[in-house]
Length: 619
Image (cartoon, rainbow, N blue to C red; front, side):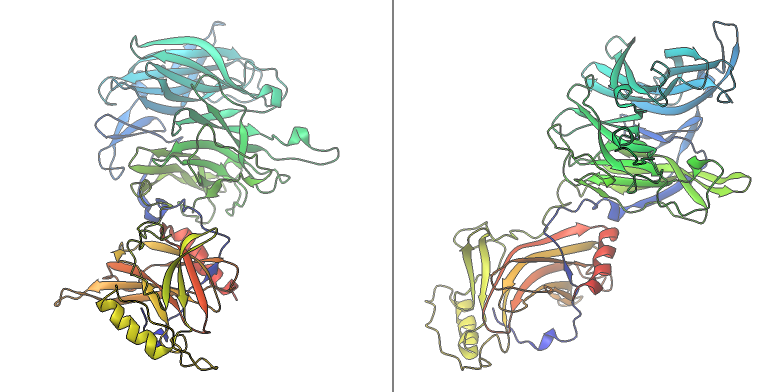
């Protein structure tokens, strides 16, 4: 196809050079919805009932929502648990109950695990400390809880015990409850284990024998706060809060003062676990920063999302309690995580194969974000965390903030090329979903290392090219004519005038959606890849032009392929645009131009902002 060049003027190119095509991990984040605040903060944790009701455990209650977190019905659980206990020494301990973790058994039973320990205990006071892990159950969908069971219990001489329970089903009849234990370890400072007990679903009985899932003692690590998800293709992943994994291996004279890093362990059966690999750490490993309190959730496409509270880069006014100097952060694996995925230990920042998600919560002055969680019910990803403000006299405005991100796009669209046959490989003898090449100015050819590509020759004499274009449209079976010579200057060529084009079929354009266009290009000059947007004419019922932008490579080579991308949003200023297509275009100087791997992907606002920001860096 050939066209006149007059309509090129006045269009601003959006350009970004990138190192290659990669899957977009943030499609769900671009549709994040901020939910109403919940007034009761404190270690938020989610579960889903068999009828689809969302259950949120936080503070001293559970809440039920039948509208995806927009409205909640509160249920108090304190009436179902012991308020105090008398230890074997005769000491009375008023109990503080924390770290509520819900789980729904296949028969509909709702379990709620938590730690129950001496209230108001002061470290190094010399007094007796009571610690336990307990579970209560509900047979009516979280309306009422009862049957408190003690799964681990002890009395310590200081603030050491059992913490942070987590429940997950590991086979057809077994639920595992993992928890942290810093009591039954050699007291080299800050060592801790991940222990577990099991529950038999058919008999509804607990096996209270304590077994070790991950032992931080040999690594001198405080392995705590376990969170587990099921992996695509079988098996499980666990993230833990590990302590200072580099410090013990530091060269003499090198100070390593990192506090917490996120370790990831995997298991085939949920019983035997691999050594954790550090996948997330502060970028500066010597500054005493931390990535703490991790949580993990699996997305429908097999990738995982991990959240944590981090103090590196905290910009609010520091609080008296260093725990309050943190902000919520989340990362996602860029490919599905399986038992076979190779994990590279980080030496600072994110491990290879993970990317940071955009901020989901506001960063008001002096605000903090702690005790975070992520949860996926198969339809939506939920992110939640305690949010407050540091004040001179302590915390203020403490609430639970929640965000919901639909993940329905992931299985079919995230990281997927929305442009059919963008590599031109489908279809014989002609690629499907693309305009036919005419054999004189446009061609589909096979190139080593790229397969089938689009080739354009802009050195064809103009009048011949335009006449052949019309003839070919009427009868594509006509033989291609012999070339007519052009002048030495070459201005009488089609490349010196209208240029050569080839169009894709129309595809849907979603209102408000950000997209990324990527292409591989090489040629004698700078060709364009256009995005053309169309809207339905209100009276004629035909599609008419409503939007256009173009991708222009920052540099080109006739021999070497260049991969480049732009971000675009057809409906940002033209909200009625409902269809779009790609137009490959080459013109001057005369010569050969080639295109391959044309991609359109949905992207988040964060990546869109990054693409726009880097336009000025391209010269």
